[in-house]
Length: 287
Length: 287
Image 1 (cartoon, chains in turn yellow, orange):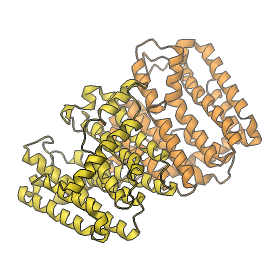
Image 2 (cartoon, chains in turn cyan, brown):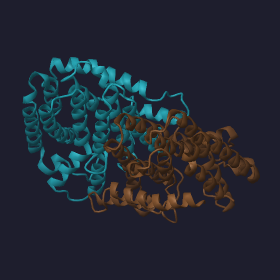
Image 3 (cartoon, one colour):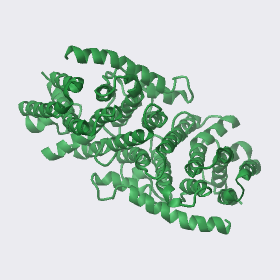
């Protein structure tokens, strides 16, 4: 990780955690158990990649980055809700998440379902109450985020396709669709929303959109590579890039996507330096 | 039901159904099963009380009621999502809903969880794309609706309290809190949002807010009475107004709430006639 990105993340991550801590209802607020569960699954040392990318997109155009923190936190809430629901017995049935019992193991299934529902709901509540940006821009953010999280090409579509593909032969095209919708859409939306609220000019936004597309897919390809390297077989029977393409070609695919992501940032010049550094950072994880 | 309300509902309900039909992704759109499940649990002959109340609040101030239909449909989506999740085995474990298999019985649990998530997400997508109202008003609607559906005094709080109360002695105060949050908050938000988007003057909005509070609670008290009259014991071990107060006093409580709701409408004069007729309509159901 280059020193500029390191300094950025060292500053941004604690601010995101603090914002989440302020926006989530206190543990002690009735009904206590749901708020405990929401905090348990959100304040858990996650890497905050999505909110950090959102802030990075914003700071390319606007230095007053504290304004974007609630929006970035809302995006992280949507990510955390999706992890809680994905872990449920009826879904991926994972007992552990980030080294501790998953939400439905720590609490129970009903609370886990409701905690996920509540995080998704709170994300939009936060956007609706956001007073730092023009309302028409927030409306666009609400729609963009709902779309990225939704069943028409967004995160929910990806999870459905992923569940349907378990134990079945998956084409390369379908795997790309799954990765783009399940992971890529929200990652991409995070960056785009940041740049959009930072008031990036339309010309830059086109570049940002291409960057989002490429790093969104690359992110999941790299995750697949990392899981395969670690011998992780969490999702037995699920197709991955290494299982379909082999390790070397998966690396090559991720690299090509990152080259394209970097190229897409050229119109931004120096403003794109943090977003550029993210490409290296995400790719380095597999090196 | 008086003839004015009958004419209103005969006109509004098909329009709400048509709007939902347009806003929900088609059955044939991949991933098909989730979209089939979303439609299965939404296009099912529901009484559309919440969206009808929203339109009624709007038409008190603005005759161009087609503008409010997407907002009213979004509120119904949130109601339908809550029914899908409430019926899950980990929650109320109901195999039937409105006389047909509940979503997780017709499809499976994973699809039911995701269909609920997707309806909640789509509701906010619809609001974000709504072009008929000033963006600052839509932001307020987003926050109001998220709050009514959320874990801080909203629908999710009510469901948690309800689950926690099963098989336990519940005080009258707690039962009122459960009903207000589980049912009352969304019912109340529906009317308030309609009047607010219809640009009701602040003075009227105060009356509407009181009306919302009273009919929101009365609605669930009446539902309890209806269940008890029908000998329905769906939620064994769950406290209800008839089980805590007896039938006669439950009727009296519902009636008092409706009297207060009617009084709250006085400042609206003739504009409040449909909302007033709703009080009679909801109360008549128990007569």
